[in-house]
Length: 229
View 1 (spheres, rainbow, N blue to C red):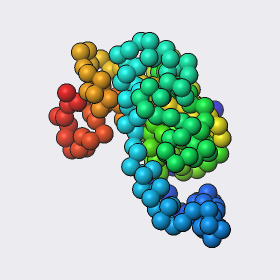
View 2: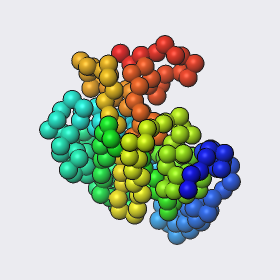
View 3: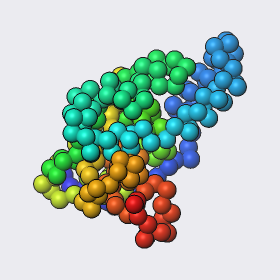
View 4: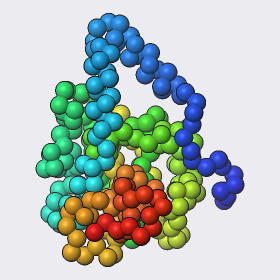
């Protein structure tokens, strides 16, 4: 069955409080009440978590683009290879959060295959390498629809592929996290790893965008003449 754009509401952040947010609040308040941690502990951790950002993932992709041997290791064992850029999934916060330890898989895009990630259950996300997930990633709108109509959903982000390109959806779970390795764009020959990392944005590693030579996450939307170099 063919579904048109008009059949579905576009992806957007929801102002409604989700059942997961209600559950998180309840567990947090009980944990504070029972002395497992304090409100100040929670504030400090939240501030740290929100400051991580996707720079770790950008470094991984940029290094893989210029170092074939590193790329092989990263695709074979993402969890272990992350240590080479200073990211330890066993202790990503430096304060021991075992719930963050998972099997980390890097998914390579090719001319024939495009990968995109989701968590249909809740909002599992590769936080040690991408930071906090965007609001839209956690919405039921994105989570439920991506697995059924992936082409239509990513088209809402402005990404379109011909029929001969396979779109693969990877659903996270309790112990598995995924990150997309986008294809290196033309026109970046001779660039340094730092220059390459600047165009590997969060959305390119989720799979709803592709790197552009004239666009970085810090480029103002109104600046169409920007460049990563």
